[in-house]
Length: 326
Image (cartoon, rainbow, N blue to C red):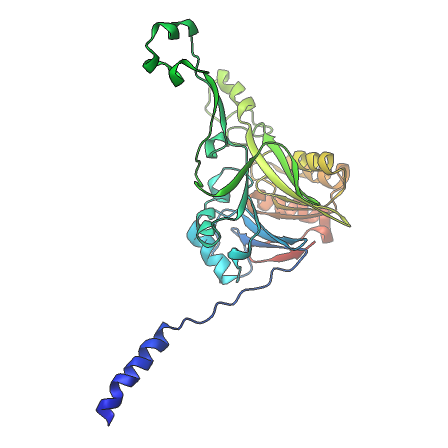
């Protein structure tokens, strides 16, 4: 009898091993923002890394803003926090730096058709206007047709790239726009800080020759921020503020004609000294009337301290894993 029952017990054991425990997800509550990727945290179970990502719920839509530096770490942290990425409705990528977008590769495994908004950056796949006429344009007529671009046709055209996220539902955004009622993408461009070449108070990278100073004027990194309208004012999420957080705030006020209730995300004050940060704190709080700040990512230790002292109770801690209500 024992010998006959053995195959049955082995069969039960086999199938029981195949049953996976059902995954449980945390609810993303309306009116909240949760930090999914950062280098500082109270929660020691999460993996700290230098990069940024957060997730918000606005008018029933789940919005992922940026996706961190490393897809494996992004996966690990979102799983640990119980984030169901298949439920993300909208993705906003702030700019084309590695520490804000590499987790998109994992997201697209889970949610391949999700709508992605990306800055109009030709280095990441935005359409490229181009003119291939070249010099001495009349020389074209001396060439056989098979040596002429487009068989001798128009030399001004637009290159439609496939881009990094090939076959994804991606839209490249050049100008600020409302994508849903009350939900605005704020498009700006960095004059100095975009490619780490120049910062206010530092006209060119140490060691560059004098004639290279003008290069600082031509970085022009495109950047997107996200603004959500509430009864208290605009909730502004910034990725890295290469444009200058104060300039993003000004642009948001121009686009929305509204006051700024909260600025959340990377303020990019790491390169600034105490005097510069103190001035920016005054500009944000007094000149621009920002009510609350929730600095993260590239803001920097010194800026954390100065902004905390300046805003007091209106400074919100927002390390990795933290959820703030707006």
